[in-house]
Image (cartoon, rainbow, N blue to C red; front, top):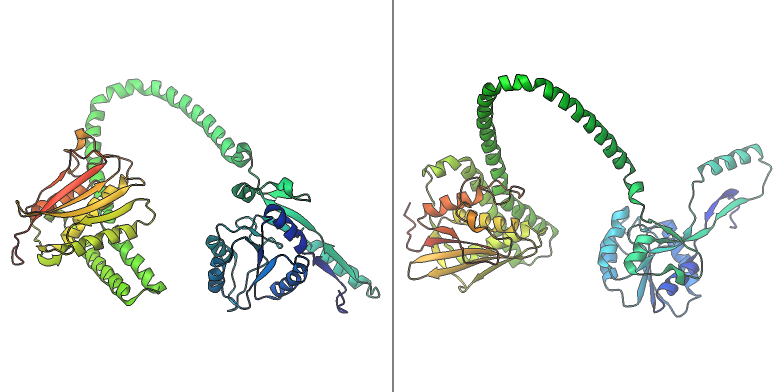
Length: 486
């Protein structure tokens, strides 16, 4: 380097030609190289080096993705539009055109939009999560060497010779990415170092294995001591058997009281989770923007509906004893029940995006207006849909609405493709705190609340015993109600 002020230092060598050779060895049909660089001095100089080295490969088209012209958002969009037979070469990305500073989160965002495009790196950027590998500098800690060089320059000021150390390159491949992309390192014309190789079970869990062994020894010793004291105190326990029995009865009563209290508190969380998630989710959608005015109005309506539902649910859960004592008054209003069902399904589906189930709404009506308590109707639907979601894996959950003209009843059903209900328990599912699976999330209050509400409006609710594809809950609602009715 012809820099007069530069007397000593360490220079990283970037082998762009070696990286291109690696790419062509793995992907001989490559036609385009998309090089990513940022808005820093290092990024600009690396881009200049790539321009120079790519002249050796006239058959390859160089696509420059320059951080001086792109933000993280625009470069992601450009990555989506890369042509076929393209390989990405990740130089560096820390500062974009807006001078925003990014860490690894930027390359993660780029990786997500190019799942089918292989990536390599000449600088170790994105190695370990995105880049398959690359020919990159053999980075090492040079702090000690720099300190010694500083001392040398200070003690020998008359020495005007330049002492520059060039850090050479090495070929590196991420073993996990090699396996993921189905590549064979043997096709490379040079030696390569594999990183992130899987370790043995013992190496990975050495601490846990020794901890388990130590715990086992402690448990054995504890068991021996416990047996010793057990036989020693057995005689005293026999004498106190009657008193112990009385204490156990009292303890069981206390445990039952605590269980009911915990179940009530857990039920509060169960009932408010769905409307709260809907409010947060659709608020996030509105904050991101990009929706049409019609969609925004729909989101506003869903948020408002769920906000009202959330407030009313809290009051209703706290007043659960009044509902069981038949001291709760229903609020009647006319509504479009088809639109109501659609909103409930959308809310439940949005709040359970992590679920792999598909939520559907089916009906033969485009619109149907009836008098009901909207909040209670939503509560019953949400409880049944949430209950179906808990016991269905990778299946369909369908809310259906129909009208029985003969009985003058609106009929709603929630059908799932889950594990179903054993025949011996079909008569117990509506009991308070009854759970088919003790390990499943929930308190067992949802179906009992549904039963109380449906009976309150003179309807019926039952589990369809003839449906064998999962579980189907059906409830009815009278059509001949007036708004003035209580």
